[in-house]
Amino acid sequence: MLSLPSVPRRVRTAVGALLLLAALTALVVLPRSDRGTAARQDGAPTRITDGDIPWPGEGQAAVTLEGSARVLTHGAQRPVPIASLAKVMTAYVVLTGHPLRPGEEGPRIEVDRQAAHEAGVGGESTVVVTPGDRRTERELLHLLLLPSANNIARLLARWDAGSEEAFVRKMQRAAQDLGMHDTTYTDAGGIEPTTTSTAADQLKLAREAMRLPVLRDIVSTREATVPGVGRVANTNTLLGTSGVVGLKTGSTTPAGGNLLWAAKTDGTHLLLGAVLHQRAHTTPAEGLTAALEASRALIDGLRARPRSTGSEG
Image (cartoon, rainbow, N blue to C red; front, side):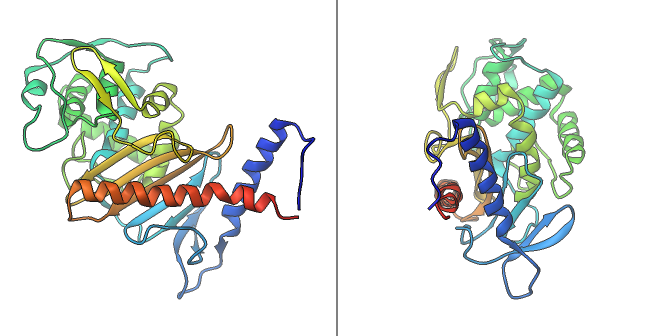
């Protein structure tokens, strides 16, 4: 039994992270046609043995440790609809073009008639806004990422690029720059089933998104009060449990339930993961519940590994 009662906390933290990385690395074995599912490390195919990780029973998933180049995947990494996970790229593109420092609100953006008209139309996830109101960039990012408002995604797109079509081209260029070669964006909110990606590609975005302090702060917020709108809640109900500190939910009938998540392993390091295409072609609510449950099981299983590994002498 390994015991480190006298080791300083910063050393124990570093050891815990290394042990998790070692645990993830140990799960990768040489390819066999009758075991596991494909993953990639520096372009080389590998395999993950069945039962090593509590993967979802359907769809696809991917996990990595922040700072590691290794990504472990489960399920066929083929492009599928991602619903509102698209809004992470929307926020990333907006903040890349209009960066905010921690505590900054940013420029005030006028709510146009189109954004106001789209509230409650078509069964989409939207928020009620008043035309002519001027909301700060940060306030609109809260409405984009917490209640997942599609009308706000399109408003931000028009503000940033002049039209949603021009903004989507910026999203696609950003995806290519990040090496997301299996990702296609066709709208800013993710309501279109032609906006598709893979779990592995979404982790490439998650790495960069969580490096933006403002975005990282917003996606970790359970609820916020936005003037002119009121109190809004985060659709990611795992926040505050299982070490979860972000990122974004997404659910439609064709996409099923999806969750791009970040969870603490210790005081400093993050596990990043994506769970896609859960209970597709049922209802958005059923799909989202399945994605949240599958993600919780996956996160808890991975977070338990450093402790179990570290207790063996």
